[in-house]
Length: 225
Image (tube, rainbow, N blue to C red; front, side, top):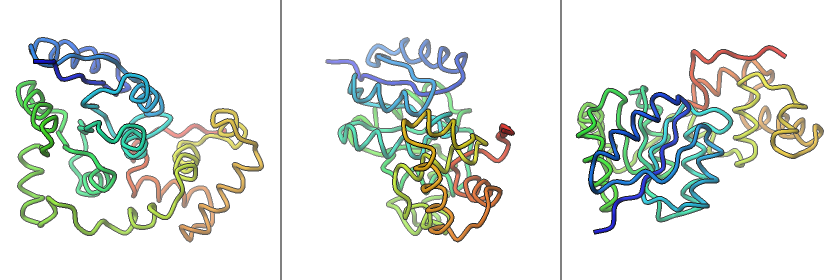
């Protein structure tokens, strides 16, 4: 039997290395790549085509929400398993809306993580028990109505979503332009479009929206430029 190939996407090196050791102790799971940013995760999926991607939500450069969408666009056969410290319904709803197959909390045991990988590899879904119970009670295990921040954010283009994260993280227009390979004028147009679509009139408002929508963490340390 071929091992289940896994890509680890986690920005903390020690956590990533620990996950690799735990998973590779399982005879039927093989870690074939590691990513420290969301954008790197997408690139590695396009290159390596892992069966399962273990992905944190709070990823730099490209957050796990948008990375999930781009990963599944790049390889629809991949299965995304979110491993996060966040248990908020808002985060769970958003990753499910983007096609994630499972959601585990970071205090999950190695045994449960390995079991979740096997389950989603079979085409099933898997959630940490507290999340599964809550979803069942709310009738959202098969999806459901997302909250307002998600509904608003779905009107954004992929590029606008990327710009939103970078603006919320405190990056200046020239930095965003350089990293995305676009002009400063184009960044300014995206910012204006974001404000118009979201009904927001300043950068602080965009940041608050990004936190509410799970684009960045509420305790993120913003860079002042």
